[in-house]
Structures are given as C-alpha cells and as structure tokens.
Length: 319
Image (cartoon, rainbow, N blue to C red; front, side, top):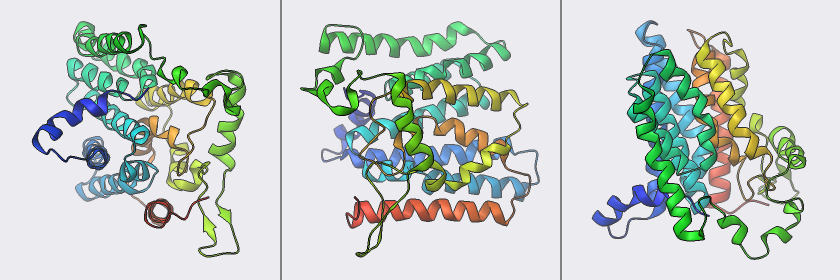
C-alpha cells in the first residue's frame, strides 16, 4: 500500500550513499518545496517593487518550510509521511512549471510523480488542463508526460495484487474489522469526523509538565497554521485562484470520506495533499505591503509547528 515514488527517487541516493536514510529524503523534499514556493512567489510578484516582492517571497518560503505540518512530516520522514512530502514536492513543482515556463510535457511528468506519491492528487488534473487549454498548448505533450506514470502504477499493482488498482490496504489483516472502517474504507458518513479534527481539535491540557500536549488524533488547521486564514482574502475573480480552490475541493473528496483522519499525526496531515494549492492561493491573497498582522500570523504558525516538532520528535510529549 506504500506509494512507489519515494522509493524510485531514493534509488540514485542509495546507489551513491549506501547508508542513505529515508528521513534524509524527506528533509530534502520538504526543503525543496519551500524553495519552489519562494521562487514562484518572486515570479508572481515580479511587477511589485523589488523589496516588496522579496518580502512576500520570504514570508511564503518561511511559511512553507516551518509554518505548517509539512515541517513535522518532513522532519519525521516515516513511510506514510514520506509519501505525502513527496506528493507535496511534485505537486508544487507541477504548479511552478504550469505558471512559469509552461512546458506541458514537464507539467504532466510532475503531476504523474505526485500521483505515484499520493494517488488522489491526480484529481487536481482540471487545474493543469485549464492552463494547457488556456495557453493553446499541445494536450498530447501533457499526456505524454503523465500517461507513463498511470501505466506504471497499473502494471505495478498488477504485479503486486493481480489487479490494476491498489488494493494493498484491503489486504492488511483485519483492517475492515477496525472500528473506523465499519462502513468500508470510504464512506460519506466519515466526513464528520474529519471536519471535527479540521475545525475543532485542540491541544490536551494536563496538570503535569509540560502541561500542554499535542494529541496524536490531530489539531485544527487554523491552530497549526493560523496564517492560512489569510486565504479567505484571495481574489476569487482570478482564474488561478478559482482553479486552485477547485483542485483543493476535488482532492478533498476522497480524503474526507476515508475512514481514518490521519492519526498518528501532528495537526491534520491529510491536508498537506492540498497545501501546494493553498500556498498558491495565499500568494495571491497577500497584499502588496505586508503588515504587522501578516508577520504575527507567520510567527504564530512557526511557533506552533516548532512546538509540535520539538514536543513530539525530541521529547515524546504527545498523548
């Protein structure tokens, strides 16, 4: 059931460095995502005064690197987390290519790599097709990049399971007997439990040191990244913003209907699958001149995620 893309991109590192650890790959991909967002922000804000655009790019780079739960996933680098970090990296790369050099072949390749990292990221396909059609580019070039990944995944599943789709999760002994899968792996009734974590999950308070604990069950997104609230001010009239929201909605459908909501985790890790589009929306939502409230929200976002990384990974203070 583990996605193949992280293993594929780890191969050259393992060949060169025999003792290469998967956590190192997670670190590299997480850092790479932040660098891409920084560069993308510079390009989107290129018509602003140089210092204004650079400040926004620094703000976005810091938020991507340290102000959301991607930091925890990349710092931990476990098998499930690594797939999400890989998907975030390649999806961000696909967005960057779409809005900058606009080469449909590479757009398809990067989306395909995201697909092999987290299958449901393919549901963001309308975002990329919109820009292929808008720029009157060759659709055949886009699918020439994407299709090999679709074929590879089908053949990979056939070799493993005898079917063209990934049924690895279903083969876990007793998985459907777990209480959170009473109605199957996917069911609309599970949406409520996800929304409860996304909007209402809070830290656990205890009367013993260190008093405030992150719960493995998750934390509300507005708490782990309060800066995301700024996305509400994004100019919805811009097609890129509308298409980003559409991509988020499409990817969210299978996520919200999944029986589990990501535990064990810091924050709500499933949301990372849509964070590349949320980062993009934020770039357009930020004003030309950042104010104190923007830097405060960035500081709080970094502080909360530093708390999670240190509390859990350094001291094991989690419930």
